[in-house]
Length: 257
Ligand code: ADP
Image (cartoon, rainbow, N blue to C red):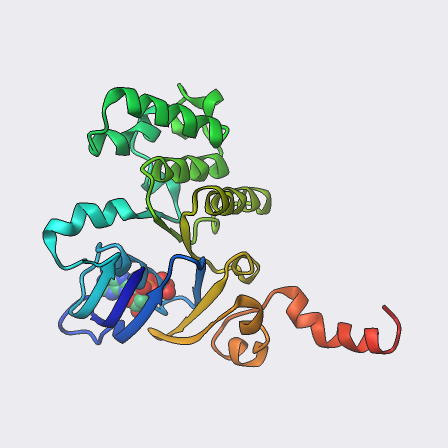
């Protein structure tokens, strides 16, 4: 479980907190998506969840490990993987194969095991054919798949995806999400998906909606989207089906569909 209790965080002493007395529990059996308008605090929260940012007050505990305890830092980073919006900012190696191995080298995984895990992941993500290629030759979607593979190879328990599809075309977006939710099914990884696309949240069990650093909705995505008017007021759209639902229901009533 990731347990956020009474978290307050500001970037500087002079500015008001982005998150104030913020509490949240993320449990193992639920995948989660987080939405909110620009500046609502999604990225700040996600960075607090894996200890990249530390609380000014309150606590963030990942499976009982307090992010403020320096000696727990490596363990927390191993538990909570992060995939960012732009894979170019994440990819550091000269070949696809080395990129997948990079994190394992840092964790000092023995050579034989590293080799085995890299092979398995390249196969699982359909990246074998590119193994000796520079990541720069890959398309945007393939690069994001590589970024995901490079995190997943380290066997994190949670994976935070910070708008992982926002730079991609619709087909690549689907591919990335399919890969994420396949990992959820097969490996039990817990996705925490930050997204600006309402449709994407429907794949998760729980949608947390942030507005000015506060949780305004925390329910099943389909239940959140029933509140179209309130959502529009805070700059959030709903999937097309939910917009059309009242009209569709009328047509159904009249026997048209
Ligand atoms: P979101 O991800 O929802 O767009 P962010 O967490 O990025 O929101 O930003 C929340 C607020 O924090 C915004 O007002 C933003 O300007 C401010 N902010 C974000 N990063 C920094 C930073 N490094 N230094 C100062 N202020 C920041």
